[in-house]
Length: 130
Image (cartoon, rainbow, N blue to C red):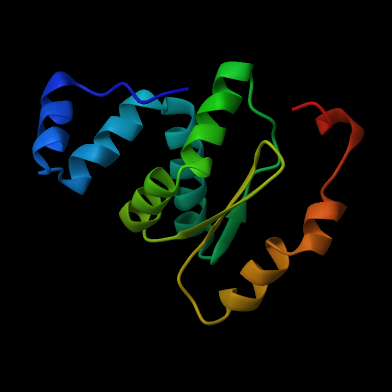
């Protein structure tokens, strides 16, 4: 799953003049499932008034799963999304995305979520080949 980069944005990148807002928009257009999932988790933070939200529902298709993997496996994309939404992202398995609002209280929660123990506890037979 690659980004759908416009010729104009590619030309800017070749010149070294990339605006992160344009990059984020490219991600939004290229990876709509990933964008919508992360956007909805960020909105859930605001609606619930909490500092943590996560997703437990597997992607509806392999294409959607690929978008999610692309967004979260790329340091550039993940970093741009974190800065855009003002959250820290974490990822387990092939679909469990979590968003953490910036907070001193979230340091321990983030460390727990990204720990080896939590990764092992989040395994299941249905997700073995995802």
